[in-house]
Length: 234
Image (cartoon, rainbow, N blue to C red; front, side, top):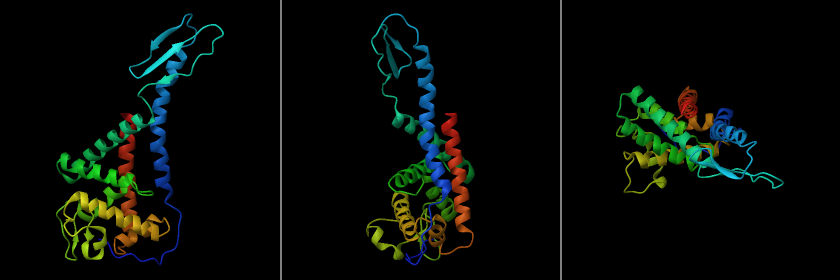
């Protein structure tokens, strides 16, 4: 459940584990690429005539002899963005399986919520998709049509009367896309007011519920581990 914003908060540094997780996700695709390029570079040594050697469907190197300086290996179609996309897709699939099993729901529905969380997190600094998914788990058990007696609605249990400026009159908080967008907007607002402190932002999001931040952060870490392990294994 969310409550109105209050600017009376003290600044804190962002939570370290989210920074580490972001660096880890950036490093995984680069490491995978190095594993592919290094053996190819080694095999290129010692050839006697100019020729093209297809190392894979993605990499092509030209060998040179004599005094001519050999050009740098040319990477074709296989770059950081491609590897990042592969890692992200593996992570999304793993999170979908984990959540579908945990909440006994259809993977197709869960995948939609996962995709929406990743899309909204990508637009914002300091908010990881796992954080949004963890809030959805805690608030609604991933049920998009649930409503509390206080009027909190949907996956992230947003109270419309407190956040009317964040959505159009025609939009429904029972629509997962609308709900996750507005919920992410609220969390981003609270995070800014809290000076980057996720603990304070989550405490405010919950209406000062005791122990709420730790539960969300712990589940967020679990979801991140699920995704990262899948990226490495994939």
